[in-house]
Length: 150
Image (cartoon, rainbow, N blue to C red; front, top):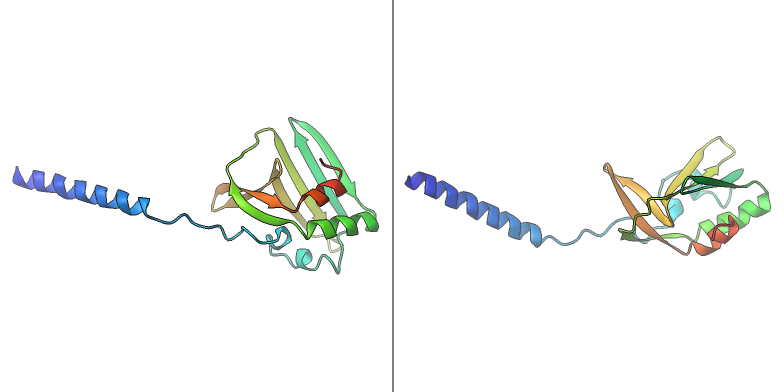
């Protein structure tokens, strides 16, 4: 009987110690916050986008099942949109999840490479170790204007 009581006491001490330790862990700061959006995929095409423009930029806006596609193919439109896109930074993580608006920005490059970004509303939707994380985007308004999204 004494062994059982001691075992229960030892287990309770471990549970209490474990819960205190987990409460004192600092909140992890995301490594994405503060980075420029174009740096995220780590592709050379995105990093060299000022030198070698994409041949097309496509913005697919799906709001409540209504799909709108905006394509930029003119070099002047693409240059203006790229300049605006290069200013977008990844902000803080957010828990605001929109269930009826899923958007995709795709850059099509002359070497047949495509780089796409998934958005949830106006937030970046990023998959990290099997979990979806959402991040606010900063300095994005000029880009939205260029692709006629307001």
